[in-house]
Image (cartoon, rainbow, N blue to C red; front, top):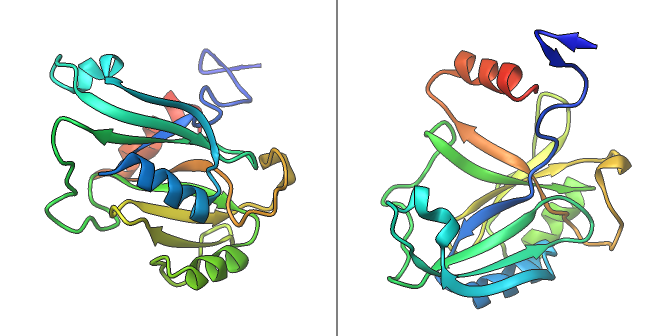
Amino acid sequence: MKENGKESGAPLISGIQQVGIGVSDVAEAFAWYKANLGTDIVIFDEKAPAEFMLPYTGGEPRPRHAVLAMNLQGGGGFEIWQHTGFTPRGPEFDPMPGDYGVYACKIKCRSAVRAHKFHMERKVPVSALYQDALGRDYYYLTDPYGNRFQVVEITDEACWFRNENKPTGGVYGGVVGTHDMEAAVAFYRDMLDY
């Protein structure tokens, strides 16, 4: 069936392959993500210029070390990315929800209460537990590099690849700030079929 000249049904983009996560030490970060977020499968580990990033780096290749890590419970991966031409640095201000751009990488969990307890016991900086408009529990956590993650409870087994009894799965989406919510909703609805 066609709607507005497009096939209706599944969205044009049905998932996120990976999210780039900037860090100052790839090996240290991979160990932290493995221990705390279950991203323990290395797809690649590469030290080379970022040739595919030229449109975003002023046309100049930037030296980097990157590791793509996955969580076999399902979801997208983390491309753990360290610029090696200088010491990476975080923003000069504390990003807040609603600021422009990507605020947090969403990752899924089967039980937000269980995952929250696990992270608190490991002394990972976490927020309180909240509930979204759909009644799902979630919370935020911050890695050692200041990157934020929203851990969202997803109980639909169709959203999981396997159960390895890890507190979290892989990438589930992103929290993005905008200045015009109506335009953003129209973009995601009309351009991407969400």
